[in-house]
Structure formats: C-alpha cells, structure tokens
Length: 137
Image (cartoon, rainbow, N blue to C red; front, side):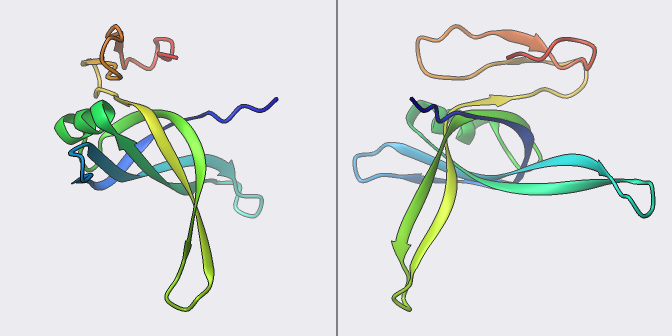
C-alpha cells in the first residue's frame, strides 16, 4: 500500500501563470515558497531554510487561483507529488518534481475570514487566520 499526498502552507512567489488546454480547460502554475526555522550551531541564531515548490492545478481549482491568488498570497495547497520527465535539446533525460494541486486555499491576513475553495459541490468552510485558532485541516 502507498499514499501520495502533500499539504503545504506558504507564500506564492510571482503571479500565477494561467494557460488553457486545447479543450479549453484552465491550467494554473505558480511557485510556492515554504520555510523551516533551524538554529545555527555556530551563531546560536535562527535561520530560515527556504524551499521552492512548482505547483500546477487544473479546472475549477485553476479558475480559483486565477481569480483569487497573486504574488505574495498566503495559501494552503493540497495535492500529490509527481515527477515530470522530458528529453532536453542535448538529448539528456530531465526530471522535475511537481505538486499537482487538487485544492488551493487562500489564507486571509490578520482578522479576515477566508473561504476554502475547492471543487464544485464541496462545502465552503470558513476559518479565522488568528494564530490562536486551530489550523483549518
């Protein structure tokens, strides 16, 4: 048995790229920055270790990204990890890990309320972004 699911919270780096397939479906791609704080053994100070994730979503989720998500937006992303494979101009096989998002949630700034966006038919779940509240998942 295996399970391929990823959940990330971070900030969108740059505006999402919106394209459309030949059949008219919306495709949204963006980079997500996440970080973890670690203590530097030499300086005894806290450092941030940054990770950048390539996110792609389709259909209703992509339409939501196009409408509500922009550079610097705080988001929750849920999806799966897949490896894209292609042959470069030099003949070498290239690989890249990507997150294919099934859900992208806009996380409001202090004191605001945000609605979880997902697939049609899902109930919108409201939550507060107050750090004293429980996480919405």
